[in-house]
Length: 449
Image (cartoon, rainbow, N blue to C red):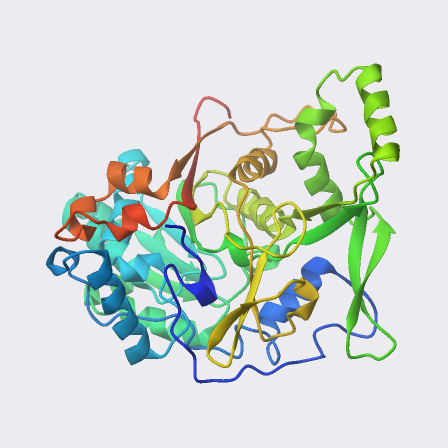
């Protein structure tokens, strides 16, 4: 079974009693890039989707005892009751499967980290703090005492900073929930801090930190702003898509401009890297040109420019970071056209409704994207300096990295305790219901200075 995020939460959604406000203030008088439209639709302090739903992410008050449930039917019924009791939009996987989900992440860190230096962990988009507490618990119980005593955990509702468990978080309300969750074990508090800022903003990080650290991003990439590019046919050049108000000022329309934004341009170069380095014959290019004239087909492509911007900042300020990211590799039932297109979903009269256009989302709908993990790896290598574009003639040597992408089931079977999330009849929702989610692990090698 495929998991549907956010308003479809994993398996299903509880009906929200609140009614979202519909805003026409998402777009200013002048046209804006699609990424700015999406950022405003999701995060605008007055009209954004998440700003209007401070309690959209649920916190379970007790761990689910999966071993006592008979099977999938019993699990679904249990979940239904939880949603009705809490009246929230969704529970994240780390919340549903606590503490085992976080324990699997902690084990993967312990197996690969250099424990001879103080452990520093940044969590970005940390939610309720459940992941931070689970990791701190696991390290306290399973690592040498000195590792736990000297670690730092930085929590950022946008991005995390050091392995004094610190969290970088945009939302002040979430920040307080995080402190309360982690503070259930008093010794954790001296190792944990919350930073209320945007992790993609370089100015908030301070000086470059040359020490090894870990960065954790769970369900962060899917809500990062994306850009949209358009081409009239298979061989026409890409154009940027902008969003502007129509004359009635109540509806929006798309505008197309030649590529000029530097972030979009870099993302296109990364995406087309292999094509630029291939020896494509002239006859193939001519055949493509003829085909596009006979059977023209417009193209749309969504670019993870928010991810590129974030990783550029992270690699710049944390050059020796290791990265763990988990997200959706595929989303079912997407109606919006384009490669890597998002799912735009809202609630109408208690039922989920998917929009056919991202322009319909004006603060009343969630917008979340699938992650192209192949492209994520390319962006990661580019930001570390390992992957060089054909126009880059610099002699600077980048940092080499070892990367791997694993299905969630493979990751948890390797690092977690899947027996803890198995029901009596053998059904395991963590392994069976997340077929469209993956983990991405990226660590620096040490043979390049």
